Length: 120
Image (cartoon, rainbow, N blue to C red; front, side, top):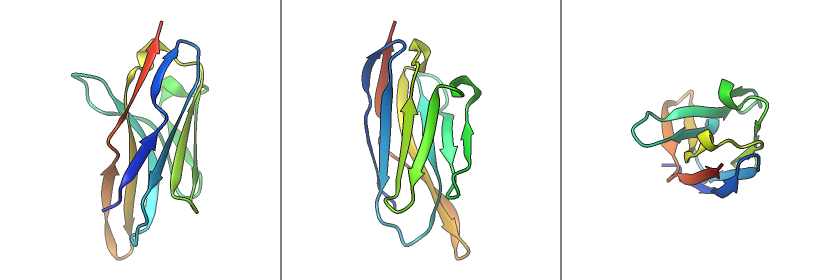
C-alpha cells in the first residue's frame, strides 16, 4: 500500500496562489499516474489535474491557464501550483497515485485530503 502525504492547503484570498505537494512512500510496484482531485460536500470527487511518468498532463477545463502540475519521479512527488484562485475552487483536495505494471493490477491510492479555502 502506497502512503500519500499532502501539504500546502490553507486559506487564501481570491486571486491568490497556493502550492500543494504530495509525496508517495516507496513502492515496489511502479507508480504510474499521479495527480489531484477535489471534492465539495454533496458532490462527487472530480479531476483537477493528472500527470503520467513521462510528464504528459491532463487538466480540468476550469483550471487550465491557472494551475500547473509537475512531478519528480526520483522523489515520488507531485506538485500542483494554483494561481488566480477563485472562491469556487474551495474544496478538499486529494492527492492520487495509481500503481501497476506488467506483473501487477492497477490500483488507486488516495491521500487524506487537504482543505483549500478561497475567500471572496
